[in-house]
Image (cartoon, rainbow, N blue to C red; front, side, top):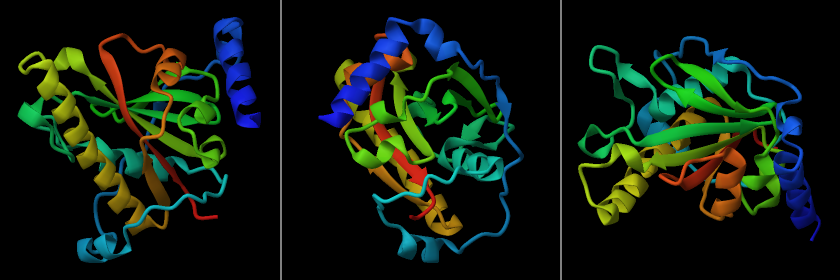
Length: 215
């Protein structure tokens, strides 16, 4: 009951008093260059891969956020603008949003930059589990259906889910290799979260994934 009241209060602040969402203006964040050399061997990372539901509230430093997002779906072949995670027919339809205490950001892989969306803490809206409101980072995977015009709507749902799975596994492996913990989540009130994020009708929330340090 307490979390439900908390969510309702946050929505009231966001939509009845929109100035609340922008009271502390956030700016684009140019991320440090990702570390793409060294790290844990792949087979060891696979061995260490696991889901965790207990998180410290300790913030992730910029270097960790940079490496996390690059591993998730950063550009690893600049000459062709291809990513670390594949997408069907190279539609590149999945956007990664990052919700943390200072606001909501959209990851721009081409510029390796966080683009500000909301200066409000909406972490509690990203899932039904109690840990989401305190974990430092919640990633939200959103399919932009407007980029999927080559295929039917039924196929779009399938490929969006499949392509999100690739990104999620990249995040799992990065976390396993770097001492972070994570869990991918489907228990989301998607209409409520989509409204808070101000998504268009042709943008569809697929999954969310919490990332942080072990508690």
